[in-house]
Amino acid sequence: MAETVANISTVDFDKIRKDFPVLDQQVNGRPLVYLDNGASSQMPVQVADRIDHYHRREHSNVHRGIHTLSQKATDAFEETRKKVRDFIGAGSENEIIYTTGTTDSINLVANSFGKLYFKEGDQIILTEMEHHANIVPWQMIAEQTGAEIKVIPVDDNGDLDMKAYKSLLSEKTKMVAVVHVSNALGTVNPVKEITDLAHNSGAAVLVDGAQAVPHQPVDVQEIGCDFYAFSAHKMCGPTGFGILYGKKEYLDAMPPYRGGGDMIDKVSFEETTYNVAPFKFEAGTPPIAAGIGLGAAIDYLENIGMDVIAEKEAELVNYAVEELQKIDGLRMIGTPRTRASVASFVFDEIHASDMGTILDKRGIAVRTGHHCAQPILRRFNVPATTRASLSFYNTKEDIDRLVDGINYVKSFFE
Ligand SMILES: *Cc1c(COP(=O)(O)O)cnc(C)c1O
Image (cartoon, rainbow, N blue to C red; front, top):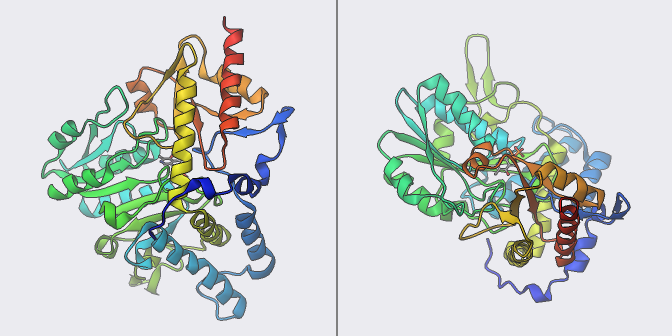
């Protein structure tokens, strides 16, 4: 990641917002306020146009074609691998595996790494604030291998109990899988410190970066983690595509996760040998258009600058938390030391689904429910929260509209 000096006062965010035509529409008779970026962010025209161009002018299958169109498609698709490498500071594009998203990336590691390394009595450490995508694959492989899962608790603010983490680590620990930024609380976890401690115990580390990569500069070599997973559709790209970064030494050792075309070296009925990483993990025709779209999304984000995006979103989320906390009866779920782009809250008297439904009637899109993170909501003794999740194209007016909307909902319950 290039060193640049962020100076957001010189960045024209009104112009940037115009790159997102979806934001410029009426929903239920009012201008849309989109605050569900944690579930899926919106796509700028630059990315949509690039995908459209592929479909109109370049569509062809990748890797096996000798003809010009196939080579064009392959070049564009493989270019994304280099862009991702530079975007997250990986050592080589061979450490970048194409997947269909964060969920797929984590399932790949749980299955391939887990089958190779986990045995009876080994331990996998997770945190109480994980997304289901970073819980269930580990439970499934634990059941198959006899490994067991240990959980780092979270304090009342939504920060990890690092002392408890240290006491969980032992020579039995084989994997520490932790979310970089919590989608339910907004907590930014100290992933470098977590990684250093795990490595001192001889354990590998997977970081779920689905909510981090879209919002701040990420450098996997600086973190030092062994695996890092994220999704294109949360970072201005299309659905159906994601990334798994893995250190070469592990990727070389790990067996394939799925079999099929593209992942082989030689196939016969007697014996099949496999392609090298990353291709041995990429069986079958990939989502080519989506992969090219991710490349365009990275260009778009880098053109603004991830440090600029982080600073802008910090300003917005701080404003949101400040304004939300002024509302009588509103309780924030998660008041972490460092927060990124997410504000979750509850009211004792108002169910989150009523809140979400009435806000939608006023054109305001928020997410309500358990946010695929039931354990952490149980930790806070709430069945559901209302979550506003921000992106750099949101405005203070969006937040003011949200606050007005909440006060309107409250008026029904008084
Ligand atoms: C969205 C999300 C996931 C799952 O991503 P998919 O794109 O649905 O695979 C995993 N972890 C976190 C923290 C998320 O926010």
